[in-house]
Amino acid sequence: MQRSPELETIIAGWFTAVNNGDPSWVDRYVSHQAATRLVDFDPDDVLSGEAAFAFLREQVLSLGGAIQVTPRHIEAYQAGDVGWGLSLVTITFPNGEHVLPRWSGVFHREGREWKLVQSHASLGIPSEELRAMMQQ
Image (cartoon, rainbow, N blue to C red; front, side, top):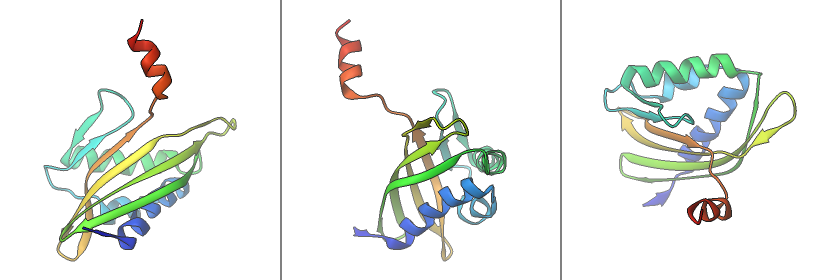
């Protein structure tokens, strides 16, 4: 396994695409394979294949300019034709409020191009809040 600056740049490009409403990132880097998976913020959102591709493309188009996504940390690794990465980001809304989600993705090479085959985005809760809920 080795660090992958190439995938780190690709991941950063995802957030730039969201900020700019530019679906070309999705067109270039998201796999159309049936096994592609997307887990979004909604607890029941698990999309596959073309539905995952279409959702991400529509998300970029609808969010472009409406929110600002700022990566706070990006790291990525690869082993052969498989790569993975994560990012901690700040999403700032038009009213100035913000959330701090996590994003992770798995990539594989299709031909000579990296393609996203699994993506997960979530909002965590602080460990203290979780422990308090478990003690109730």
